[in-house]
Image (cartoon, rainbow, N blue to C red; front, side, top):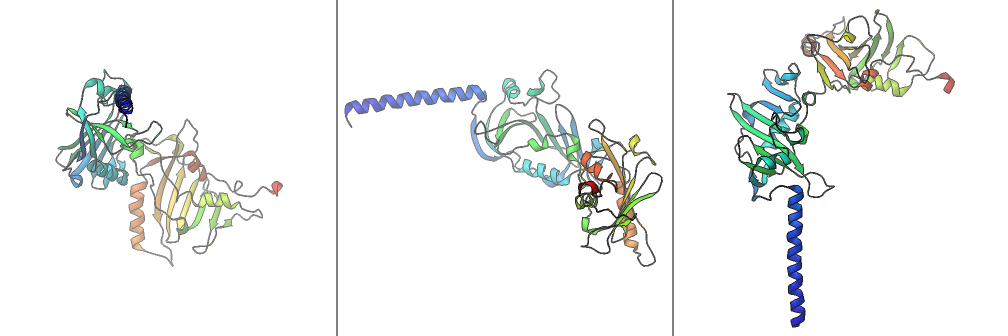
Length: 361
């Protein structure tokens, strides 16, 4: 290499170093977060006693979620003690236990505000500057996790977040961790157990729709599992629309709630005698009675209630099913469920809606 080429290479290396420094400076200025110290792979909660956690409080700038372990399992305390989604709680605890630190750097108020790590109740901070706080306690009331969640970070501008800024309660450092907690920074309804009943559509033998006056509007029935439902009453020469019949038959099996109302003051739309009743009778003899609220709209929630019973007959009697039905009724009957409008509409299908339009044939 000639002396001139060596000189040009030297100058090029200097230019590249300067550009790299400027680029890094611009990145730091844009993110406004110090690079920090490498602590790659360190567990944030190395000795977290996951099996001893007894309650979880999630404070958000908008509201709070209170989860607690009870004799009947985990519940959402600020949703009238309704059962919680245990799989979601397990996911949160395991994710917390497995969280590893990528970097850490000293916390300052200005940085905490820029990455949304101010306490959710901090009055002097803007809403965008506040984070979510998660506190987990054991059976003795001792805090085993106190964690503030800030913004997530992406490696690329249009990429998927792969890390999140967090801070320990009372700590002096901010951590960039390898877990994303966004799915847990949600309101109380998202923590409810979404499926109140576990009924396979194939187990349903009979579907009755009874009007508010006690008159049977229609009955669909099948003689054995695997066969299609047939209209047993009233007689008709019309052809049934299979899609609507399947929608009705799957209404109970696919039921997922959005929220629950205060059981001590049921909504007026659930008052007795103003809406139809759907009875889903299983081959076992257990019957689910569904009472959908009379009306709902985008501004009015769609409500329904569910009761369960088992009636023995001369050729079918099982004391264990009587007990099972009573237990399910005790669990379901007190609640006023809020359901999506489309699911609510599945319980309001009339026989006329399920018949093919003769004019279109």
